[in-house]
Image 1 (cartoon, rainbow, N blue to C red):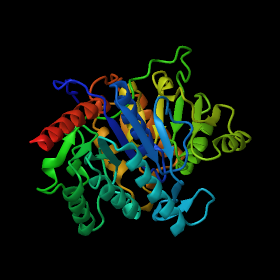
Image 2 (image 1 turned 30 degrees about the vertical axis):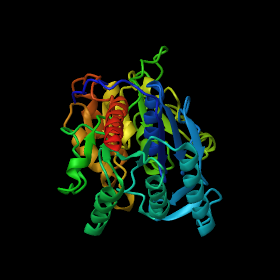
Image 3 (image 1 turned 180 degrees about the vertical axis):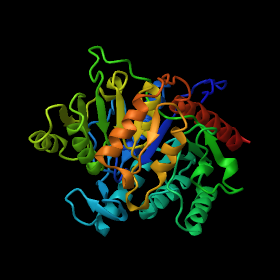
Image 4 (image 1 turned 30 degrees about the horizontal axis):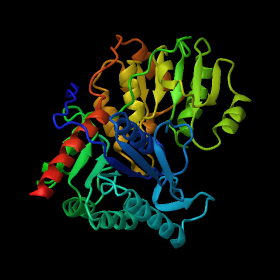
Length: 398
């Protein structure tokens, strides 16, 4: 995963960047958007993130202007049913308020660069607000550079019409599609039908990750099995299985890190009956540092968690999220399992015994070096969009 060297032959003129994101289940989409925004800020630009998902205070938004729309989440894995902050089915007034806020912020900011996270390759239930935003951007006195931002693996379209719609919207509104992956490891066509029309607009950036964490100064997590399920409310089955496995593995310390809503209350409740060799607590900000010292990681295989595993070199068992016929994490896990010390265990095969057996396999495997290259996707995104914006401006003056 060799990363491209960051160059900027055109020099830096500060620009205004607007990133629009709505996370509906986990928080990975927002985490990636915030990483991009911080990279723009580090390069001297002004970055604003508009978030339409539930608030995620555990994520680092330092140095980023973060604007909150009336928040929505999916009804579990039913992404066609959107729920508001009170747990009620979202109504027209909520969608109208979100659309109006988006357009007003766009017009007030008048960004030089507009980035929509995932759309039009996902978030089709929010098509109306995204399309209204894109139309408004094209109507500005000076149209911004417009890019879509997508992770390495997408949810494959269930119907050809969905891919055709994405192609149509990209052709109509977008200058480029930023693919935050390594083209050799996880090319976009691993999960999405890349048409002849779409291919020329793809720009591979490398993976978007924060700088690698340093090992924990107190070696927190040393020799532990660290279990995590990202920043959302998924993963209950994984946690339950790990508790049962830990009870059969009393000589080893297990640490379960819970994310999502009410993590403190859920952790406290589970600790009441947990085995003596288990610690259960809310997700910790030192998680990435702890992985350096852990015996192994047990987790789902979301984008950010997968990068944490690669950057730390920790042995890992991935249990990819597959509810609602989701295949994204399974595709990613299978690609990464080609590496030493990484194994995949499907939910259908997940039992305490199968987990302990898979852990034994990875623990017996040779160590895998932490990867240090290929994670500069945020910096490369800045460089690529700077160059495209400069080219756009030159074309406007001809």
